[in-house]
Length: 340
Image (spheres, rainbow, N blue to C red):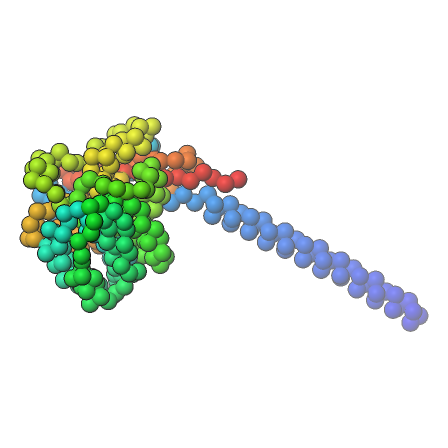
């Protein structure tokens, strides 16, 4: 009798073990399916950030717009637009790239005033600044810092460089430096240079692709090494030929041609930043004040194209009802090939 009871208990235990094992396998299968689904959703995410500055006909900033007020097209196809409301409190990493080569030393008395204009945004604790100097070579001065005195010292110590102005190399190095900024930081390049590149080793197509790949906003303040160039800039002849409506198949070639004419202006057009020439200390101060005031005046828009083709894309941001207002936003992005 005792033997029979022991056998029955063992059989019951075996049944419970089998049920427990089956239950565990079901749970593992469900977890595995959930994980696979989550991974798939993650790899299919193609969020493209499109910071946008809106100005009225008088050049004043327009506030109070919503996502529904904007239209963004990817290679001519309208996309759903999202708007992030948290831009006012977003931390910023800024690289200031300053040309020291060729005749840039003539501009040093004006450029040195930059530190006092940047000091307020640094003292608020939201901005970290890195400084890069360049002539025929790029010379990183220091990584990002929130120490205003250190930035002032760097600008006071500017020394004339050699006969080069490797603007493309400086942009390439600055973007790589911005990649090291903490996650969640807005990435901004303030480029102070002349308009023509002299001596860069970086390949133009690679820099164009890199600009399209990175969410970096570029502001360019340019000076002219000769009176004729200043007059050309005033007439608008130095503006890059990057216009809305360009056929995306011709976009890379247009970018190359624009960079050959005016590197800073072409780069600004691609990122949606601002391009301004200066010829006096007062104009330089005004341009930099505009730069600092506009840092938190942009609408942080984004789109999520479905299965974008690999390569350079043309995007166009505009208002659904412009009313004379204009939108400054990036004109391209680079989509990576999807890994299988």
